[in-house]
Image 1 (cartoon, rainbow, N blue to C red):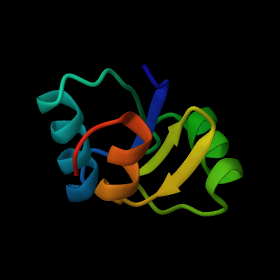
Image 2 (image 1 turned 180 degrees about the horizontal axis):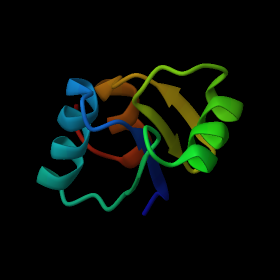
Image 3 (image 1 turned 45 degrees about the vertical axis):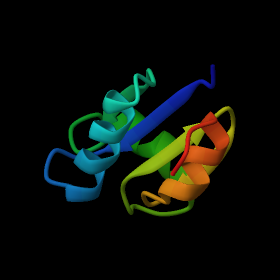
Amino acid sequence: MAKITIYSTPTCHFCHMAKDWFTENNVPFTDYNVQTDLEKRQEMTQKSGGMAVPVFDIDGEVIVGFDKEKIAALVGLPA
């Protein structure tokens, strides 16, 4: 199974959609709240080049935004 890290904020609608989608599909992930975790915010900006959320790190592949088709392909699920 892929190692999935999500960088998100509590007020981000797409962050909630993505986490709900992973949960509904029984895909484990680690979530970091970059609104309060400054270290993880810096890590996210180094990986993504910006401050937009959500940011996904799936086995080293960084995706900015909830691109469900691309994410599904990386984790082996239908979109």
